Image 1 (cartoon, helix red, strand yellow):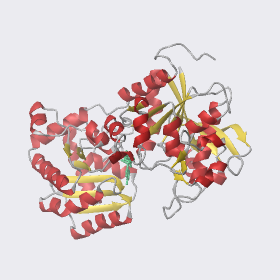
Image 2: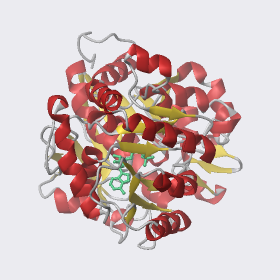
Image 3: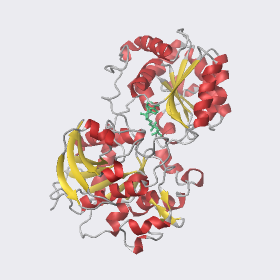
Image 4: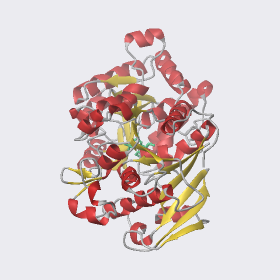
Length: 489
Ligand code: ADP
């Protein structure tokens, strides 16, 4: 059995802003079949305190980046949690990264250095006899973990895996913070945390971890190029031998159209026609005419990355083809405004709800005909996986994990009976327009469309295969093979 400490700034169902939470929440259960037990380290944010009422003290920490803290243990939704209770760092109004207006908190470096610091201390026996064999650090917020392990004391150190869920978020700060990170001076170098003269949290993780991974094979290749590498492609090329692309899955219990309480009419492959009732509910919720028009949906952060501007350029064309569009999301003010304006221009045909609504997102996947993911880059993407499982045909840009998970309905794929969605490339407004026209044409061939839906629903989008690959990676870091006998201490 291998003990893994998973370190993440968000974990579903406790606190979520995006796909990172889904992954950190689902992977532990999936790994339990592969000789791996996972504990998850998370800040004890106010939102988490509301959900986790019973937690036991593990250890008091006298001083953690400016105040006293406590490490607590709790179980919740099948997760074995270690929670950092540090009110001076985590008790804030607003979201987990920003103030109520959405602006990044100025001391985020301290808040997440603390998360990483505690993780590394756990590797050194802070909560003895617990001592993880492997620390799995997710994204920049946990990026300093491998640096703290590498530059910290101790002979027998845990191995570290750094996973990138989105290279766009790097945690870059000025050089002045270095002296407060509790790292030795030699760590401020190219081989450590130094990045363009400042401190790079994700860079530190990518530099110091024993192994690296990202969430799809295509993204793993893309981030080694200047186009997608966001300044880190050079380092990633050097470390290409240690970089793995492992696809995300989805939690098939949380996302089960057969038993989903958010749907008006749950359905299975054999009863997919029941989706019609959910479609009416979506149309009602978005103020759309309740007719049989093809209904497209977007459930997404409304950002440049997600290609929402490309969609905005196509809305009127979509409406002129007799289709409808329902948009749920929030993000960049200009894009929120563009989608709201599109709805005002097209009453009864386009509806926009600005906000985050987990329950409505389920209903949209279970009731709309197609889900649009026109991302400029997409490390893995979960929306299209959920779409597959819910018979909501994904229309996606051919990039990152979208390229790896959807089989485009080109003539050959349709003839071979393997298509599960529509892909477009290059990622431009014109190419998206072509894809939307292709989708509307296919929608009007109910037999072909129905086959695509059913095939999507039968596609394996579970964690099974990928959990096994993670387990093999942990084992290989320890020089073992799965099934090997126990820890040697
Ligand atoms: P990212 O993590 O880049 O935002 P992913 O596709 O990996 O994108 O994951 C997005 C997750 O967040 C999915 O589970 C999706 O359903 C959910 N989501 C995104 N926006 C919203 C929203 N406005 N309301 C509800 N769920 C949302």
